[in-house]
Image 1 (tube, rainbow, N blue to C red):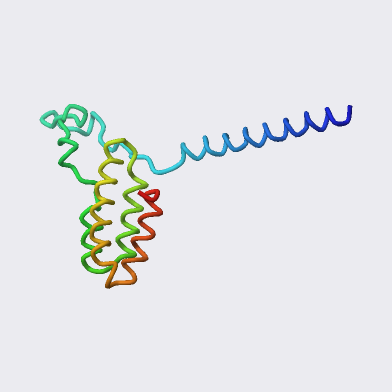
Image 2: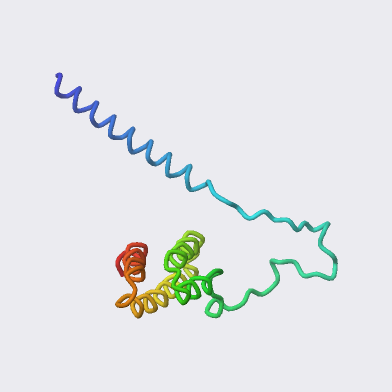
Amino acid sequence: MIFSRLSQMKKLSWLSAVAGLALIIGSGAGCGKKKADTTSPETTGSSEQPAATAKPPPAATVKPSGSQDVLAAIDRKDYDGAIASLLRIRQSATTPEQLVQFANLADEARIKLLDAAPDQPKAAEALTVLRKITGGR
């Protein structure tokens, strides 16, 4: 009798821990910066096109914002700044296309860091951090 109650208590406490974790993750997913729509139909002139009907540029030609900063920072030997910029881009990537673009940028950065790593110890450290960011790919 005592063992069955202990078993039930363990199950209940485990389930409540899982439920609490799910609640924390669920509430954290809703937090963060959201883009505010500053243009309203009243403020938009009649000659302007609404943003919804404007054609976006093709996804293959658009690079993530800050991608030039990453490569320029590596050229300047500012490896910490390059990794910080990569992290910002990674955190802002939400769609599968953006994640692919991030992966391509990370590959370009990896190539540059591989070239600099034998001579620059900071580049070797940045390469290690980049590998951790991208999951060891």
